Length: 358
Image 1 (cartoon, rainbow, N blue to C red):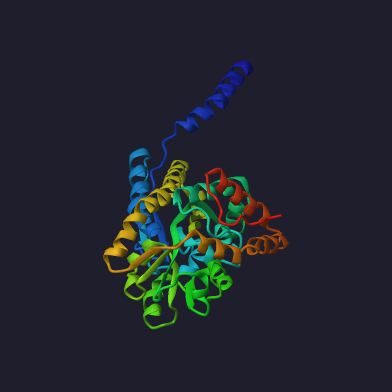
Image 2 (cartoon, helix red, strand yellow):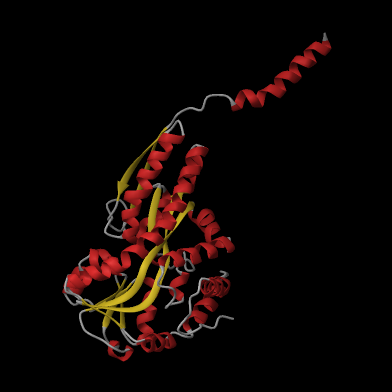
């Protein structure tokens, strides 16, 4: 009799995992708030709206028992440009797209490509370089999870940065004393060139250039076209600062962890596809937008390589200064900047000036 009881008991113990695994999964209706301080005129926000949201919705419906509904808020309707990280961190929004460059105190290292100006102008290569750095330096994702309660879903490449102005210029010396706008760290590019840097953001750019708050913008062509900046600054000069990957799409970690595993998998999967698409979409649109600027009456021109070399030489010691500053903060600054230089060169990029990083 004891033997029979033991046999029944052991059979039940062995069967329990099978019984649990075959238990029906409860279908969930999931609501997710997704937002950015930038409007859909920005390519990365447009792709959040036109690719990420519908693709996650479609795949969850097709591949799981669940349903996802997104509540979307772009252009600062829920969170402002400089408040999106905190919005994700606190759970005001579940998913946010934002520029790491607007978080100099919270994420001083994450805008690392800006610290190496005149990098590749190919956004596909830019996002690959950034991904290699994030994969090889655990701190880059770990700090987002541990300190800011968010999971990195995808990196975001911008188009190649150039300089739009309301005056014509042909050499770096022509910029001396001119008020020119930028965002975060790229203000240093202006400072070293002798211009007067002005912190700004795209939503306020048209009015600020129109009223003379500043006379130019470090800007990729999509921003210049979509915000009609050619109307207030008709000179667009392809100086080639580089295509910069310094935005991210992140999700509140606590909310992510509460999602069913199959939904988590789809969000991460679509996030990586979105990441790659920010590169390919920007690469495709660059020549189209340059042509749009020309047709709209902008004066678009390229300058000789010697001008890029001259500007890069003015910045030659700045990357090392930033690396040292970040190292002293206990961050892997030198490691990240060295890796960025190396990964760029692996993809065939030749720097106008090879920045020395110890």
